[in-house]
Image 1 (cartoon, rainbow, N blue to C red):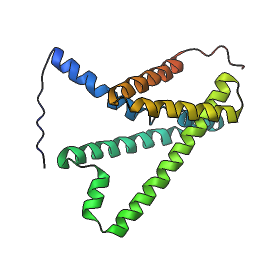
Image 2: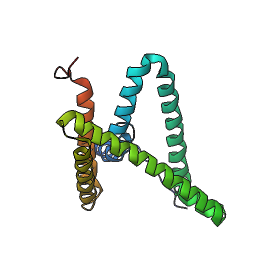
Image 3: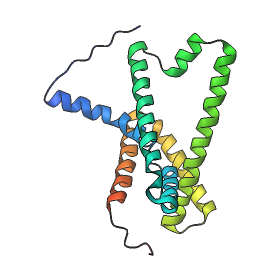
Length: 177
C-alpha cells in the first residue's frame, strides 16, 4: 500500500492545487445536475409541491455519506470499491455485483439520455427523436474530447455545469405561463 502524505501549503501553490482538484469535483457534480434530474425534479415539484422535499434532503445526505465513505476507502487502501470487492469476495459474488452495477449504470444513463432529449425538445423546439440524435452527437463529441486527456474534459464539463447553474439563476420570461 502506498502512503500518501498531505501537506498544507498557502498562497499561490495552494490555490493552484485547489483549482486542479476542481475538475474532478465538477465531473462528480454532473451526477446531480443533469437533464434527467431536471426533468424528474421539475415534474415532481409541479405535481407534489413541497411534499417531497424530505426526499431531496435524505437523498442528498445518503449520497454525501456514500461519497465520504468511498473517498475514505480510496485514501485508506489506494483501491476503489470494485477492486476491494474483487479482492475479498469469491468470483460468483463479484459477478453478481458487476451485473448489478451494469444494470444500475444503464438505468441511470437511460434517464440522463431521455432527459437530455427532452431538454433539446423544450429548448430548441425539435422533435423527441431529433433531440435524441442531438444527445447522441453531443455524447460522442464529449467522448472524443476525452481522448485529449482529462483536463480538456474537465474544462468542458465545468463549463456545461456553469451554464446549467447560470440557467437556474436567470429569469425565464420567454416561457409561456
